[in-house]
Amino acid sequence: MLPAAPSPPVSETRRWLSVQPVGPPGELLADMLAELLAEELAELLAEELVELLADVLGEEPPEPALPEEPQPPSTIEPAATASQNRWVLTTQVSMRWVTPCVPSGVLGSKKSRRKATTTTSRSHMSDVPNITLNNGVEIPQLGFGVFQIEPERTKDATLAALEVGYRHIDTAEMYGNEKEVGEAVRASGVDRSDIFVTSKLNNGFHAYDAALDAFEGTLKDLDIDYLDLFLVHWPLPDVGDYVETWKAMEKIYAGGRVKAIGVSNFQPHHLRRIHGETSVTPAVNQVEIHPYLANEEVRAFDAEHGIATEAWSPIAQGKVLKDPTIVRVADNLGRTPAQVTLRWHIQRDDIVFPKSVTRAHVEENFAIFDFELSDEDMAAITGLDKGERTGPDPDTFNYVPK
Image (cartoon, rainbow, N blue to C red):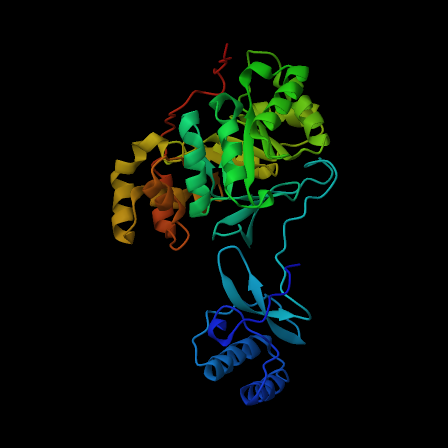
């Protein structure tokens, strides 16, 4: 529970509201509160109470946030977040910031597997929706990727993203910049629990013991105590056995230092083997998706089996940004092609993490939650699918770094 705020001077009443006013104005306010608290409808209570408080204080308050099903008795108390202070109507005692609870037990077991769902909760300091994974862990739907960002630029780029409001960072052992991501997380001033960090297993460590050791190396390089999500980066169908690799991932998950495990670039037939030969269903499958590669078969399989889909290369390395259809939609909405493309991903319930080292682009990519695409626009963009990859085919890619 947030600590109680000290009583501020009258000049700060826009930011903090005391519920025990003193003097004649306070007596008048108390009478008003008593009268309003007799109302049965919480919504009307909130609206009239805030208006009356504004009249007494002579200031215009911010918009109040109401709980979905308020029940009397109610009180007005300040709720502090890292980004703003607000007046809110709370029931019984006080307003609390509720952090997601990570349940114990097996991730996505076949007996208790849950589908990944989009929730109405919002990531700290942003308007980014959360996706609830099949083990109850919440992941921000928009993240910041660091693929192909040089290690010497990664810390500053990640810090800039965190300043803008991103709370989901996607890295990998093979990117060579885990250490710098960890440095940015620690230097950001943001509580570790408010930042979702993903990394991925190096292709050279698919053997059982090698995978266990590689995870220890990731934790050491990041130096952030635990990992939120750890993925098998590629199935490498002709190199070793990805089922053995997944069993190592189950061992890692059971150790309690990662909140969720998943895969990347796995096709349905790869996932069927995982499902048939192991006990833990991946929480996430990160695959290439953009308007030129909608990847509907993989998305459908993931959805059927409670696996959240993440989209890498969300703008096809920039190839879709000059597409006439996307440009037309962007012009009609007064948005950029990149924003329209990222919004398309969001409305499809995919998790997406664009990357950039340019602050203006980082901010642009984040500003996608104050508009929506129509059904017609969504269909038009989805119709651009032509099965065109910008990256390797998971069925033939067997690269192992030396």
